[in-house]
Amino acid sequence: MDSQARLAVVTGGSRGLGYEVAKSLIANGDRVVIVSQDIARAKKAANELGCESQCVDLADLDATRKTFELIQSKYGVPQVLVLAHGVMSEKMSKTLRTTTQEWRRVMAINLDSVFVAINTICPAMAQARDGRVIIFTACLGRMSGPGNAGGLAPYRISKAGVNALVRNLAHETGLGARGFLVDATCPNHTRTDMGGPDAPRSVEEGAKTAIWLATREFDPAKDKTGLFWEDRKTIDW
Ligand SMILES: NC(=O)c1ccc[n+]([C@@H]2O[C@H](COP(=O)([O-])OP(=O)(O)OC[C@H]3O[C@@H](n4cnc5c(N)ncnc54)[C@H](OP(=O)(O)O)[C@@H]3O)[C@@H](O)[C@H]2O)c1
Image (cartoon, rainbow, N blue to C red; front, side, top):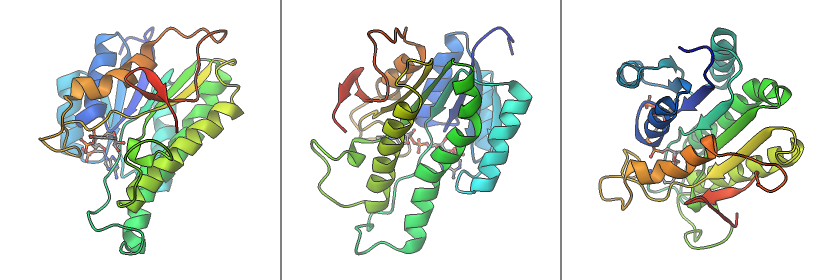
C-alpha cells in the first residue's frame, strides 16, 4: 500500500454498499482495509479490489476491539472510517413479538460494534485532528418523516441508536472545528443482499453520499458535520 495515501477502513466491505465505497476510495487513491465476517468472501473482495482485509464477527465486542487495535498497529491511524456493515432483523420482529436473542443479535452488530469500533480507533483520529467517520444508518431509524410507523423493532431501534451516537459524538468532538467529522447517511432502498433484487437504487446510487462525505472538501467556517445525510442533503433525524 502507498504509505503517502490516506488510510480508509471500511466495514461491510466484502459486498453491497461497503464494497462500492471501498472501490471508490481505492479509485480515489486511498489505501483501504475492509472489515467483514466471512473469510472467503473477504479474501475474494480484497483480491478484486486490491486492498487488505480483516475478518471478525462484529457481534463479538472483545474480538471487535482487538481487530481495530490490530488494524491501527498494523496499518496506522486511519483518516477515514466508514461503517457500512449491518444486519436486518427478522420479519416477525415487532416489539411484542421479537425475542431477546434477536434483539441482542441486531443491537450487537448494528449498534454495539459501532460504539466499540469508534471507541477503539477514533481517539487517535481525533487527536490527529484529521479524521472523518461515516456511518450507514437507515431512514427506518428516523424519529421523523415517512417510514417510522413501527415493525422491525431491533433494526429500527439499532439505527435510531446509531443516529444518537453520531449526534452525541459530533458535539463531543467540536462539530468539525477540531478536524474530526462524523456523519450518518441513509443509502435508501438499494439492490444488495440486504435490500433485495427489487430495490429501486443501484449500489452506485446508494453509496454515492457516503463516498462524497469521505472525500468532500470541509471548511469548518461554512460546512457542517454531525448530521444525517441523504443524497448529499441533510434531513431531520
Ligand atoms: N440495502 C439497503 O436497502 C439499505 C437501506 C438502508 C440502510 N442500509 C444500511 O447500509 C449498510 C450496508 O448494507 P448493505 O445493503 O450493503 O448490506 P449487505 O449487502 O447485506 O452487506 C452486509 C455487510 O455487513 C457485513 N456483516 C454483517 N454481519 C456482520 C458481522 N456479524 N460481522 C462482520 N461483518 C458483518 C457483511 O460481511 P460478510 O460478507 O462477511 O457477511 C457484509 O459485508 C447497513 O448498515 C444497512 O443497515 C441498507
